[in-house]
Image 1 (cartoon, rainbow, N blue to C red):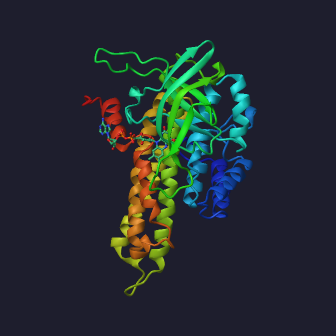
Image 2: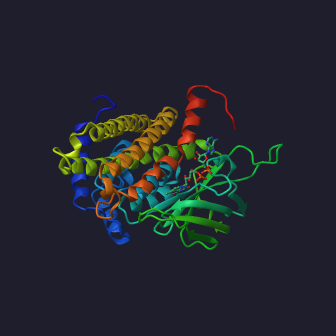
Image 3: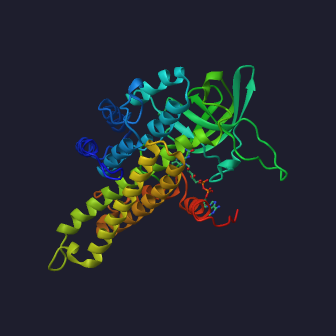
Length: 385
Ligand SMILES: Cc1cc2nc3c(=O)[nH]c(=O)nc-3n(C[C@H](O)[C@H](O)[C@H](O)COP(=O)(O)OP(=O)(O)OC[C@H]3O[C@@H](n4cnc5c(N)ncnc54)[C@H](O)[C@@H]3O)c2cc1C
């Protein structure tokens, strides 16, 4: 098998997930979504990337991204897959203690527990080197103080993996020094850990939250990995996040495109269905090509990641996220346009995707920050910031 093409196992996993996802059309309320999550977990889909020794499927991000793409293509994007098994599960599996693995991995895999992930801060935004959530020691305990914003699913997650720093090293300019991140598991109901839902214009069951950590006291074993390991262990989680966001975007793009194609085959206002007009057909064909190309890069990134090439995976994961986000936004835009007035009716369900598709362009890393990454890291161009 060449690494970029799917094996027979992949094809049958794809077919099985697609059939499962299609049998649960558009579950937009929280209860149905939870049920869907648990059923998918029971079938081994949610924990497919987690180690077999801890109840997972023993596969990788290639398989997990395939699952999310197919769920999204059927109109059921399980956003928390980006976070719970992909970031948190990966970081714990790679860097957690034996006790943390035993505690968390089986329940993340079987869907009985969820973990959210919080890195974004109001005053740092895309510049995560500026995060100020600080962890200090008090005896063997840790005390966390800071704020986070836009963190998804904190209400439904049993804990949030919070990215902090052990010290804010002042630079000459008085700003925090380069980030030495450390990761803490903060259970949902820990004293001093407060959340406020953000009023988002998004039609999704997963909500975003602003978080306040006000002297949150955590035991020593809340720290995941080494406090001195730095960016390496953070990127172990962020590369899967980018690959999974690509899968989320490709799935959504395919979902929108399929609806548009179905409509364009039938809808007739002159002699032929509107899909016969090249002005309608060609942009849909282009959207399909863009989504396929984005998937190819996603598969490359997943392959590099799963074979242990963290550095190579970083560049590919960024490019895949970029390509998929752009392909998704364009596919949704063209799909809405193809339906004319019906593109904006509730009945056809495409209008909410206009805002939802933008998420893939903004999070977890914006289009511009990926272009910056490629400009600097790949092309060696100088930085403006
Ligand atoms: C639906 C949703 C879910 C999310 N879920 C989570 C989550 O679960 N956990 C979490 O931690 N975060 C989450 N986020 C946050 C997300 O990762 C951030 O929104 C994202 O990283 C961008 O940060 P920001 O919003 O602060 O934008 P900013 O950093 O303020 O950027 C604003 C604009 O300026 C541009 N810009 C900034 N710097 C530069 C530069 N140097 N060059 C060129 N352009 C620049 C950006 O590209 C962007 O267009 C979520 C966001 C959304 C919308």
